Length: 217
Image (tube, rainbow, N blue to C red):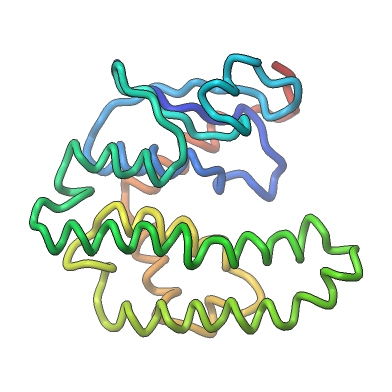
């Protein structure tokens, strides 16, 4: 089997089903590409050799025969070269998919990541309490721009692509504080994405890989 994806063998309950190896898993499921998982523990110390593959010890890392790369967006682009169902061959459709892939990871996800930091990881800090109202407002503006750009289309491009894998997995992190429920166009978009059989298979596979307790490397 040529495709190997790294993932964690345990994460806290709130992170289960949201770890970024879900993205390449979903991509592989969409095109029927067999893959194997290499599960590592998120609990230090991680294997020293892994940091030569991923400088921060994160997942996923992908091995495809002689090709090795990290970052879920880069991995999606790599997998997209295998099948036009992920990355269209028409020049404009391809450009649109790539642009929206970068938009998902650079223009939307950082805001939601900061919101998670404020609401979960730093919730007890005074600065987080002060930051939250303006952050919610600014994040809402980002989502409003996305909803307007999506319009009445089913997907970000003319057909489902790797851009939708990225954007749907990003937006799943916004299912709180009325960010999605107050924007039915985006809520429906996410619902279409997670209803796809390939997503359901990828999610089930990730959840099945998690062990009940932390396991050190």
